[in-house]
Image 1 (cartoon, rainbow over the protein chains, first blue to last red):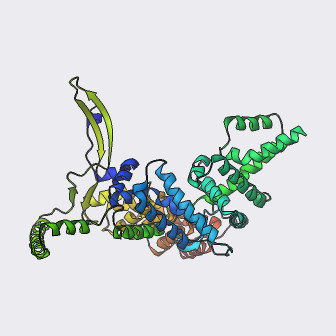
Image 2 (tube, helix red, strand yellow; image 1 turned 30 degrees about the vertical axis):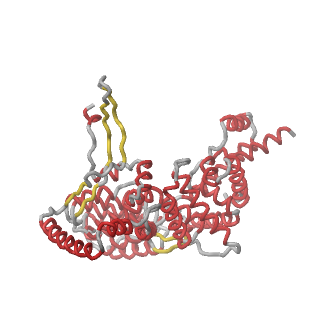
Image 3 (cartoon, rainbow over the protein chains, first blue to last red; image 1 turned 120 degrees about the vertical axis):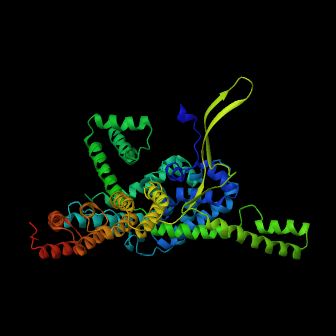
Length: 208
Length: 317
């Protein structure tokens, strides 16, 4: 009980071990506290950048989306009224920006799927998990072919299907949350995911 | 005909089943259908599961590089700093407007000059007396987060609330200061922020060698989920590369790390540094194992070169 009655004084380690309450951070950011805004950014920017990179497959475009999304959040933070979660609000902005980018690519370029990694700018498909547990060349070739086929098929999905598939499969978001982010119903998101998985299955069905 | 329709419906829903996006009743209907002996749907479910697993395997490791995240973060905060606070006039504009209502501008210029002089004098004294790691609580600042832990009424209408508060604090000091180093080490293992970990490991990497720093870098090299952070930690361990436990940890990286860039760096450090023969004997076994299972040509080549130097077998059986 003594522990419960102790009012915690600030220690710097508490900043890293216990994340500050999001509500308080948003309120502080709305009051003009830039460090609170930065904390909010740090809570979400990794997943925002990951989503943008996976969708746009371009480091430059993903960085543009990152900058534009968080600047919009900053400029409009006072209009955030807690009608939805901050995550939903932010992702709504990010997905709209990504959809704009995807739609602008009317003629699909055969661009290299580049990402910045610790080894420099690499092909995204080379940077994902390697089948190195056995180093078996046949398995490695199989894995490379699979990656190439998945990537090619992802490119063929419509921007909305791609968005829903990425958010559900690679970001692990629930369909209800995806529906909220995209401003649609859970059912519509489910139909979209269904179409996307059908297409992916047709591409990978014989790949065993 | 009805059975075929059932199978069509079940097979259409298999993907959503694996995503956990079906209702309890819908899931139950599928499992009942398969449990009733529908071989076609059982096979279809297995196939669907394999497809999901294949795609899951491709999803692993697609985290953005720590450098890219940091660069974006810095650029964003630079942009934000240059912007006015949303919904408000710039502070300076407000101060200037208020000041000119009180006194003409020349008076304020003289006052500002005197103020700066005083600030320099007082600041200089304060700086000279400052301890190595000065911590400054922003007095009067509202807590960044507060949670009421306990509420008691005393019967007279007054309440007694126990509140847990988190406050922000600024800590100033060099990376060689023990207090600062402890904070850096705690930030280096912050699971929620790869960018912060990367930034911190980079600072620790260039800080003066110490046991604490070495332990933190070892932990980051072996355990961090981000490729960039692991790579930086490995580079930071170069000064310790002749120590047996560091070499064993690097050998573990060579055998286990999924990123070929990190493994390449590990093999370079191990082959370019030396240790006593007892430690190197352990490495012979590791390098021989790598000759059989490593997929990266450069790493195999380095292992082979070193094994030949040690006059150990480099045969792949």
